[in-house]
Length: 173
Image (tube, rainbow, N blue to C red; front, side, top):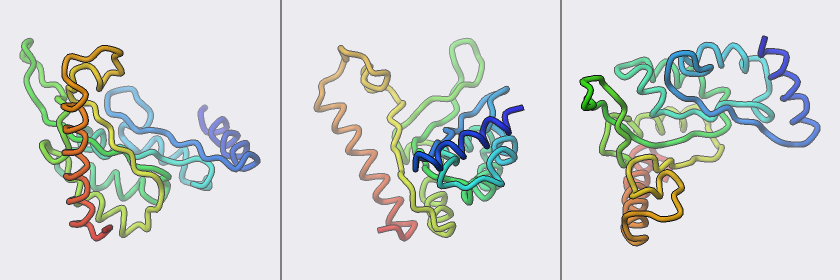
């Protein structure tokens, strides 16, 4: 039932010269978590007007060992933007596994390998870094944060240094 609406959105964006990007997430019941459903919606549409905003961390959550590779191969030809962040699995106080967001390079996401794939796919869109790990509330948009501005900026700079290293590894720089 979403297909006609997504097609209409692509046609509208073509008139306006815009591109809508669907940010992928992980979790049961979310369109794009498995990638196949979103691919079915986007495969025949022009990625200049409607595309993936592929989040490799969420793809890794959904398919840690190799599923993220298959998801990336499927999505990259239809990807207008990519989102980068990192995570690890940890056990909560309730004994259930949960995602713990981490600085880039400190977790399970293979950022360098993904960037190599994106480069090989001739990706040329925007790259966003998502700072979702604990930054004293700055990560959640809090007006008052519990760490100094300098600490927040230092953490962000560390992520950018790690990202630059991954980009060099992938041959982007």
